Amino acid sequence: MLTQSEWSKLNPNPLQSGIVEVFARENPVLALMPFQSIAGNAYTYNVEEELPGVEFRTYNEGYSESTGVINPQTERLTILGGDSDFDVALIAQQVGGNDTRAVYDALKAKALTLKWLRTFFEGDADTNPKEFDGIKKRLTGDQIIEAGANGGAITMAMLDELVDAVQGQPSAIFARKSVIRAYRNLLRASGGTTPETIMVPNFGRPVIAHNGVPILPIELDTRGTEILTADETQGTNDNTCSAYAVRFDIDGLHGIQTAPIGARDLGEIDAKPAFRTRIEWYSGIALKSGRCAARLKGLTNV
Image (cartoon, rainbow, N blue to C red):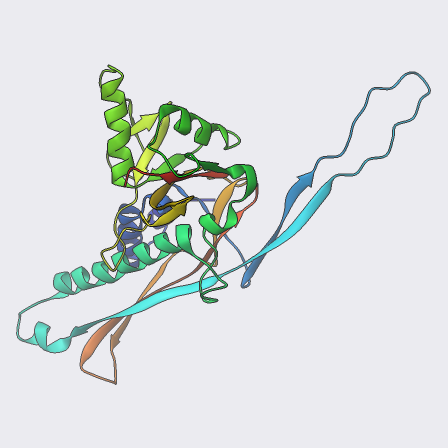
């Protein structure tokens, strides 16, 4: 499995590679998440529900039969895309050219990646059958940690508990910028020196880390609103937010796709004098372990 950036390095199509680079640059989840290419429109896998029993025995004694329990899951692919048109007159009048057209294509790619990012966290197929379920809807039970009955400010202990709720080392913690600012303030208040930083592949710059786990900011969506909202309800408090810790790998959380993000130059279209670029992606996510992600909810650092 490869990340979208790694897929783009293997792709000889400059148009498509450029679109993929925009996806990874604008979307910290896609910068880290590996994708498995599949055939068909759905992906079936097994989730461990219960391990089989084992036991010690004496000589000539048999074992008690015990069989593990697995729960088959099926994830469907969703279709995300859009068209970007560039008037031929702009080229004829030398107002713009292919470089200018590429700017518009990049804007479309940015809109797509932010739409996908919002769905990764907030998607709900019951509300919108065209999209996939995000991790907010998928996480239950012990994978949800509450910051107090009516919410509370982030603490080091809360982050430790969030990281520990993920089996294995999380790939990253995702949070609002306000939560990351609050974490920096905690470090200053504790008399700490320069915060620990770490370079994240495909992200392009060092970021702050908590015990070796990078904390990546989730910013605005296509509508200019926060993706990780500050209007979640925790007890009597209606103004809280969440942070997420995620482990990306083949046995944890990963993406599925028929192929990497596609970008096609359709040339001049018949409907109007414009060159059209179509960007389209058939994708989804697979959460193979109930402990590959966790949510810390009820944070008042909004």
